[in-house]
Amino acid sequence: MPIRRFGGHRSLVSHAPKLSYGYTKMNVSKSGCRVFSANSTTAGAELAKKITERLGVELGKAVVYQESDKETRVDVKESVRGQDIFIIQTIPRDVNTAIMELLVMSYALKTSCANNIIGVIPYFPYSKQCKMRKRGSIVCKLLAAMLAKAGLTQIITMDLHQKEIQGFFTFPVDNLRASPFLIQYIQEEIPDYRNAVIVAKSPSAAKRAQSYAERLRLGLAVIHGEADHSESDMADGRHSPPLSRTTTGHKGLQLPSSTASGHHTPFPGIELPIMMAKEKPPITVVGDVGGRIAIIVDDMIDEVEDFVATAEILKARGAYKIYVMATHGLLSADAPRLIEESAIDEVVVTNTVPHEVQKLQCPKIKTVDVSMILAEAIRRIHNGESMAYLFRNITVDD
Image (tube, rainbow, N blue to C red):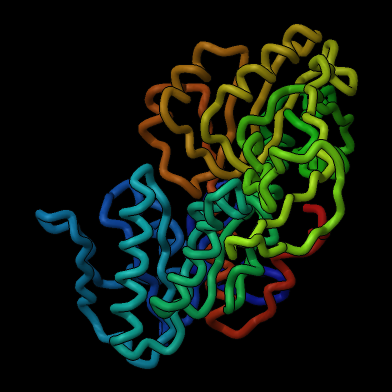
């Protein structure tokens, strides 16, 4: 019986077929552990099936569906009393329905006396709303509180949009990385990758690009001057105190005074120095991409206009082939059509988010399977083993 080792721990596999990138199936102890999928759609449950196949366990028996009035209902069909429960929830296009499915299932398992309820959420929704913007709210923090209230005791996720999101939770969060799988794809699937350069489409993505460049021993290029639409409204627009309309200079703080009629004169206001508005410099490419393969890296691909514009700039600077690599392929709106018509040669994303429909619309989209690391994380947590092996060589900036 062949033995496959994972970080010093043995997994016994009997004639197991090889899976992607040479990994084989691994088993987890079936006692006291159940794995459920909270997705009501077939596409959303695909990742859960791959994970349970790698673990060597069956998917838990539960029914998740929407009633005629669009309410979410969950029926758990087996006993979970005193057991460790892992809920795998991928986030399809209908984000809010997926969140309600996760919340309702978590609460159903909590009231069924499950011991621990661990959410496996590869792409954490609302992660782009993790900062205060104008008079908005930090929705990501609200969602973290809702998950805790519903009964979750831990979360396994992957490549959070901002690592500081982990501080929103009152329970442990394991933020796994997809970069080892994407780097392996570059080495094995991109011919002549040694002639490539890693590209950050904005200065804010430079740290991630630098991490890839250092691990692959490649050059680095940064696009500077391109408008970053996703962060353009970060300024807090709440003017407090309001600007004075009556004073022309700084009068100093004055106490309100009473008039003969008994009315109070309000504070005259204090004029503060106004922050100068930012002015975007002309678009420049810091780094040499002429005659090279350009590999743009980011954590997610949602609306692709910025990536398409970056590809056109790189093509104009002499790059002869352009790849886009990201962990989460949201690919919203007309993303498949725009990619197909653009200078981008290939878009590589993982299967943290279902995107089979987009792949049918655009053959340039390729998928890397990350179910192996998610399955190993589940196995280690259930068996009480250290998670350090999954974070080896991961630095603070990664």
